[in-house]
Amino acid sequence: MGRIIMKWGGGLISDKSSLCTVLPLRIQAMAKICKKIVAMGHELVIVHGAGSFGHIRAKEYRLAEGDIQGLDQSNAINLVRSDMDMLHAHVIEALSPLVVHSHPPRDYVTNTGANFRGDLERFLQPGVHVTFGDVVDCEPPELFGILSGDDLMLRLSNELPDVEYTIFAMGGTPGVMTDFGNEAKLIPKLTADTGFTGIHETDIDVTGGIFLKVERAFEISRNVDHVWFIDGHHPERVMDILQNGETIGTRICDV
Image (tube, rainbow, N blue to C red):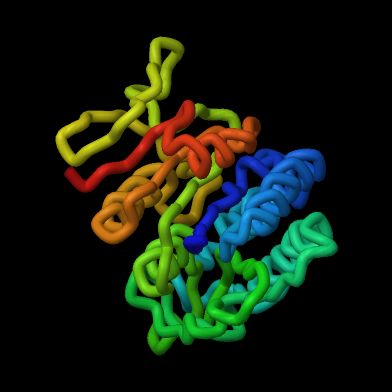
């Protein structure tokens, strides 16, 4: 069975408006589907977002910008990493009794963006692998920065062998929408010629929001046949994709 790379969005597993507020029922529902996936024989890598465990403090202390002279950011780095470890622990616990390998990026990544340096061979060991967006060390002059989970999705999808499905499970939206207002409609198939208007929550997000996700998804679709955005409130849609090749959501296609 092929390998699956799955994103659990930060807005799915946490309340992004309230500092360090986990949504355990959402995590448990996603974990339940993942256990079914593993039972089918698939290899699985999960990348989870930061939500209110990372973005709020990272935004306040401008951690995505790297070292800023005159601004004491060291305590904020430690707090964000500690908060992310807390959210990560919730994810790991929900996946029990599966064999789970934990990979905090600060342990294996240097620099941010799609060209980060990091040994991805650690994700080939048998078992379920879990990693996340994190504060990582960078070369001078930045010294540190925020590695987006979407950049991890790109590299893992394109560089690990036998990846057949890349699935972005988001919080409360069916997929990629035509707009962000009440009249917005789901885009079932998104190609480079399809127009959409997203919204980037700049007051909280410290990475690229939906725009970065879609950009990375297009890059992934050049190598992976099934690239999807689905509503993580309906995790059974993952099974629809694996069993039928279709579901309610947005399929990203390079052509």
